Image (cartoon, rainbow, N blue to C red; front, side):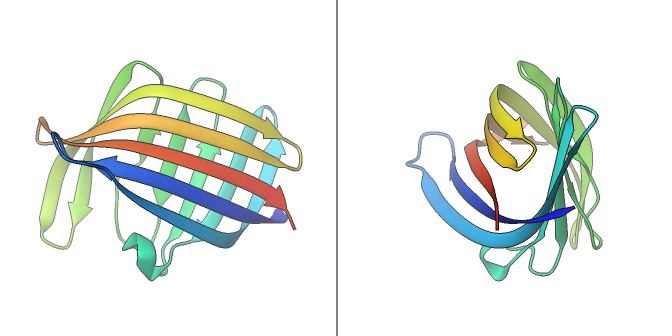
Length: 139
């Protein structure tokens, strides 16, 4: 794993509302092997997951986001597909759906960029439109 700087810009908007945005810069680790790019970082208070390890696996046909430390449920992003999973919260489990509209990626040995546009559903009700823009650069 290589030490990298990870820049994450995101927006989310509830149906019929203006979008909210956030930006996070953090240290992380990156590895590319066998056609798969992996990067990870520790979440901050800004994201609401303070102290949790977040890992992205960027595969040829999909992207998998995993958060450790007590929250379950891999988020799987695959273009024009919907993925449902059980998401554990401190208040109980909910069924979430990820409907991925597009994935743009340019991953290299030394880092790269990733953009994902997707919608989130909770118990089959649309709750937000989302966009991640992530840049990974060697330190």
